[in-house]
Structure formats: C-alpha cells, structure tokens
Amino acid sequence: MHSLFVKAALEEGVLDEVIIETLLVSISPSNVSHSHNFDQWVEGIRERYSKHKYGYGFPSKWSMNKRSRRYNKKIALY
Image 1: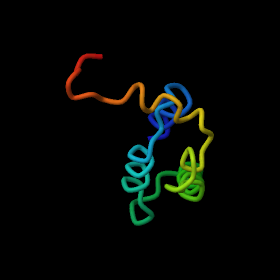
Image 2 (image 1 turned 120 degrees about the vertical axis):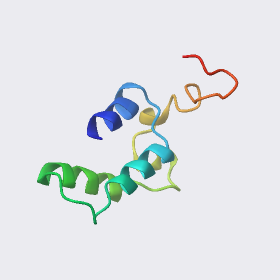
Image 3 (image 1 turned 90 degrees about the vertical axis):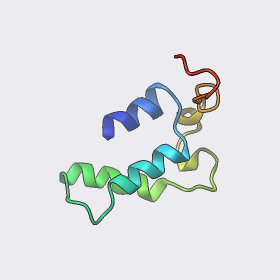
C-alpha cells in the first residue's frame, strides 16, 4: 500500500480522494496491525486528509496530473 501511494502521489502526481479513501478503508483501525511504522504512516494520512481542502490536505503537486491522466472509458489504451 505504501509503495502504491508513493507511486501515485510523488512520482505520478495523480493523488485524488478515491486513492486516499481506498487506502483508509482497506487499512481500517479494526484490521490487524502490520507494523508500528506502517500504522503511524496510515494514521498520519488519516489526520492530514480533508475532502474540503485544496489538494486534500497534501501538497498540490501530488495531485497536479489527476485530470490529465484520468482513466477514460472511450480511450482504454495506455
């Protein structure tokens, strides 16, 4: 999960609310703990995330390509 988040946010710049909410739902507090560092990282994401803030509470460059690289049903080639 961490590597996918880093790939989406830092490398590709396509972070959006779907990615964040999927991460937070799949790693809910009721699930089994993975490691102390990973749990702290997820909790940090949970604390920073806000639907109503520009960039969802994260640097805007993490979301700069979310519209240009969005999946298009008409063009299914990548």
